[in-house]
Length: 412
Image 1 (cartoon, rainbow, N blue to C red):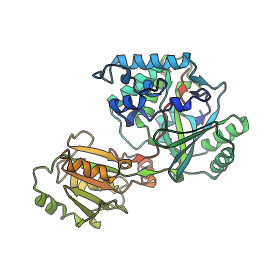
Image 2 (image 1 turned 180 degrees about the vertical axis):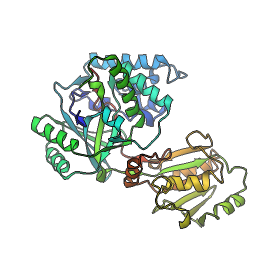
Image 3 (image 1 turned 45 degrees about the horizontal axis):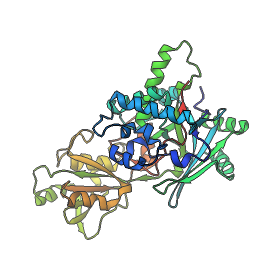
Image 4 (image 1 turned 180 degrees about the horizontal axis):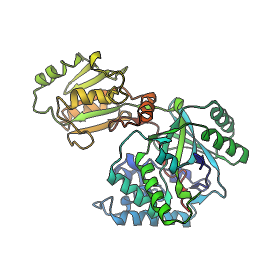
């Protein structure tokens, strides 16, 4: 099987993309999604967050949600708001956020390559989140949320993409958050074969975001494979992906807020931190400028923290990450937060919300303290994945986000 292949994408009919595309299903809660979809009958949120069309107290994992998603999906097909391309193609997808530009290939990627580790993971998944995506795929018989993949940039692919995107895009729009989304359809069979060969020559791809979507696609494939007499080439053996070169990716900080100081007074807490970190009070919010530096906020006061060099493991790709250094040297031993994946005393704030959000959460009394971190690098992510390890939860926040509804993959 090829590592990737072209496919007949399901996408908004000509002139309808602005009405359809929506933020990813997992970056909005139901109330936010309901507000974003208000007055927008064709918003993809009616499919990806179908609970917005049900009573407000509806369990988002109830059977009625998936039934409603299917009903809304079928309505968009019947009304021809969404249409399939007539033949398998690739798509080029450009995202512009301020001065940042990244252009990736929309393709379907091999489930067996994911299962064998050629498409590398770096996070654990939660069973309930996987189950949700499995039920969504089965209900729609389609994958509607792309997995965000990356690769070590290739001169051949870069040259092809640069040439193909000199033409006017087939779709070009600004979403309501200001992000520009542009899409080119690649129909030339020779170019399609060139792209397929170029990716087949790559040693591996890496999941940047979308671990639950890829895991769910693999579970659906395993189930359908078992029920099929001949699964070779079946559409369920591939999952929807957008693949960007590593030198265009943007990772923002992923910060932490905690509910209490574990029974310590402010003075006791600062004294304990000082055994492992250099602590400097400052008069401005702290956005760390390098690895090993952290911002720390208590009501009314920011501090700059530097971890002592002897506390940084040299040869462990996971434990040397800033998220691990904070966890292993402060959150666990001082605050008693041993499992940040499940502990209700910690929450996570994407860097897109800014340092002001950290101070707001603390000053409001909702949280007791906040920590700002230096962003995890893509090189560190790849090193962890190459080692077959996993990163701590909430280690990376990628921006800009891929839109749902721009291109979907219908299963045969």
